[in-house]
Image 1 (cartoon, rainbow, N blue to C red):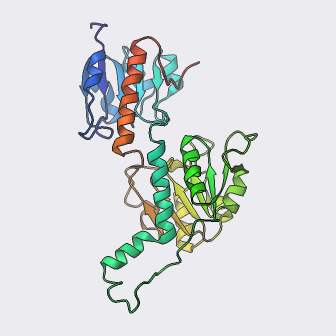
Image 2: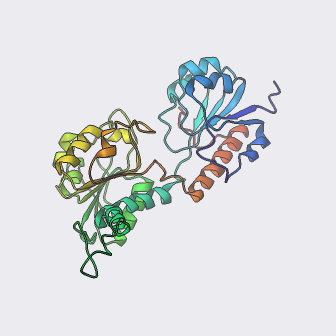
Image 3: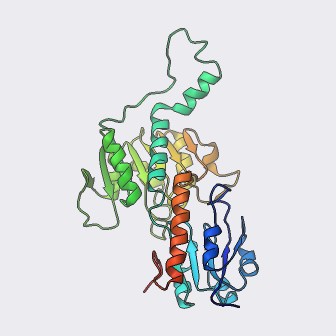
Length: 324
């Protein structure tokens, strides 16, 4: 194999590029193969002799690394990289990179789309109008559920990275009070955002929005106990990772009216099984993990992905997530 033209394989290219972007610039760095989708068991066959692998939701660990002796680089085309065994990759001399902050604006936008939908029950009322409810109404207006003004309400952020900060900025423009909790227990308040404990976020907030990574410590962070801390009218928003929520506990809370509603863009398993309890829970609005999917965000992701490969080939890798 000519090492000056290494083999580059994109294993699940469709999600990032359903046809409106271009992987062709990667050909500058090697022989390019692009597959729309890839099952984990197909990786050793599709990526045989590859030096560079790119993918969005591919899962790889020691088993794959042993079967891919030429592999030196994995470019995760997303911010989260928990599907890659980064320690094992480091052991095998494989550099792993990610795409930080490319979707901040878009995810913050969807976070507030869910908040606004729930605060005005937009979906319910728009469907009512379509069904003729307004046409049959004796008055010039109607509403079937309480309408909530956000000004003066408290937004609680679990995590305070780039996306959470953008959400806070939007919330402050709505004249909301914003509190947050983060892993750094000594974090100081900033941006007119008050740093409080996790329990205070759940107890004090009218809206709790999740913005933390999925780790062993954060799996089922939102469980029956913490849902029990929330106000009966409070809303739960998750545009981060599905594993953060005990889905049965949330479904139970929604069925019992324990909390006011939920807006979710992520679930524990994607696509979800038909029996996922949240699919039939009341006041639960689920979007199909598309917060990151605006053209603008995907274009940034593609540009940074290509730049990451260029930096690696040039001997100065950037956005490395498994360094010493």
